[in-house]
Amino acid sequence: MDGNVAYVINTLYALFAFVLIIFMVPGFAMLEAGIVRTKNVTSVLTMNTMIYAFASTGFLLVGYNIAFGDFGSETMSKWAFLLFQMAFVGKVVNIMSGGVSERAKIVPLTFFTVIMSTILYPLVVNWSWGQDMLADTALDLNMYDLAGSTVIHSTGGWALLAAILIIGARRGRYPKEGGVRVIPASNIPLLTLGAFLLWIGWFGFNGGSVGNFSSPQSADAVALTILNTNTAGLIGAIVAGGLMLAKYKKLDITMILNGALGGLVAVTAGPDLYSIYQPILVGGIGGALVVFAVPFFDKLKLDDPVGALSVHLVNGIWGTLAVGIFTDKLFIDQLKGVVVIGVFAFVSSYVVLYILNKIVPLRAKNDEELEGLDVNECGVEAYPEFKRAF
Image 1 (cartoon, rainbow, N blue to C red):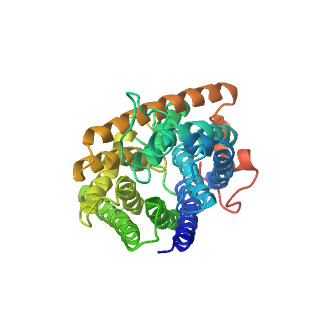
Image 2: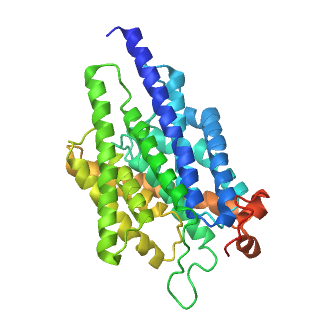
Image 3: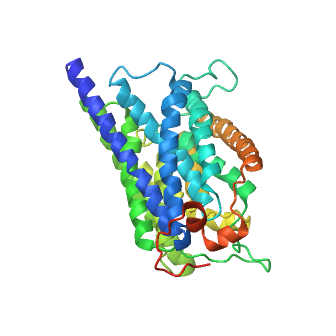
């Protein structure tokens, strides 16, 4: 194919993938809006908007240069490559923000978004996809991670774990007498819409990461990647639903959707390497891990309203290791990548959040949390005609 035509096709495909990934912005927003109580809906929508704006701008102005330097792409417009990479950065903080919703304040989380998008996440990208400042050192990473099971999902999950340890659980979530207080989702249709928007966005997330669409071979690779991505989501949902039915005699839609998302996270590291059958195992195990991880984190009193630790952290780790199990990539390289990035992401996030918390408290006051963050943080209630649930 003529080089100019290939350049244009690849540019168009990167821009199309960028748009699909941006569908994940309303995906996270709607999922979180459906999970939280009505008194906190506006605050999570505002936080998601702030994340998209500040994370994208921070990466544009500072983070991209740390991650990639002057590197662009010879096969497409450098502006399309920049946009595609910029679409990823907000997802790292989206993972974290949902897990601390209903008690975390918007302004300090926005400060953390700026630091994550300009320094922490770009360093992780540098070591894995970018300039590789760790080259020729003992920490040099040879991990294969096509679209970010570790680079994006685990990084966001480790940041969330750090935030939960600092902020604590929602008021009344773990009563003194023991057990776990169930806080039901406020809007199941919104939650479902958000999950499916994320699912659709994943096709750009993984498919666009192949990086080329201008030859029959690359088109086949993209198609296989998207097929395997979808398969893992399907099987994750089926396995999660089946386990919930077996354990509790109930089909919990929130767990089924999180099972699908867990499968999608798990396959993200290597969907271009798998046969059409391997994602059945990868996604199925991902869905099962979600079902078992959610109550495990509750036992540890790690309050995560959206199940992000189970979906993104646990399955980010599993998905990266799975590449070393089901393909010819070395397991030790995959494990090393998980450990190095995990240690950096958790420690750096904890230090930054700890310092931020001393300057601008991350957590809302008890009376503010009781009344709802919509009133205290935003001054706008999502459902003003409803009686707020305390």
